[in-house]
Length: 98
Image 1: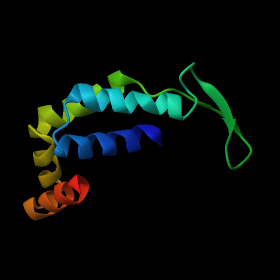
Image 2 (image 1 turned 120 degrees about the vertical axis):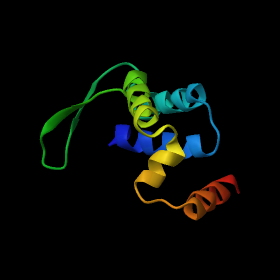
Image 3 (image 1 turned 90 degrees about the vertical axis):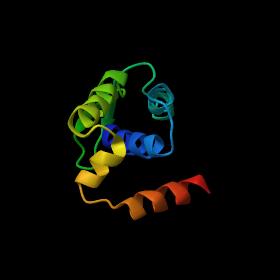
């Protein structure tokens, strides 16, 4: 969903040197893009069940990034802990900087 995707984008933005303030501002733009800027919005899922889509929350992102920093120190160290190599980190940075 949008929160997991937002965290993935936040990790990539962090690798590119964006500040947490810049990352959070970008993350919150999702609410406007998804029509959630005025609050929760009902929708019908693929099974025909009515659900509620809630806006993304800066606090959730901050909590996730704080967990990464508390447990791993940095985003690159978090990714290294999960098997990413320095060469792969460099390749991602280079590809996204193009």
